[in-house]
Amino acid sequence: MVDAVGSHTLANACAQTRYGGAVAACGLAQGMDLPATVAPFILRGVRLIGVDSVMCPQPRRQHAWQTLASDLDRGKLDATTSEVGLAKAIEVASALLGGKVKGRVVVNVNA
Image (tube, rainbow, N blue to C red; front, top):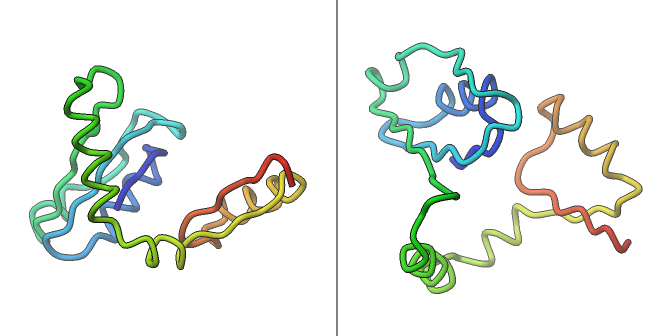
């Protein structure tokens, strides 16, 4: 799981992660708090990993992008991605906040 929101969303991500899974936290749009218990960590071995997107050295960034380019199954990414025009962004944002969106939504600002 990759979470760019933090707060309650990050707590829910940890709670829903399967046994031995990991959650990468890379943003705090919802807040810096973590209203959660330690249950996912001690009962299912969930790992919470912070992603440093500010001070990370350039060679490490390049290696990460090269690994994604070679190892990421683009078919799986495409299967979980939808695109909406800018006019539908507010509607999709409401659905997202209501927990009704799965996968990745790309907002095409030119459509």
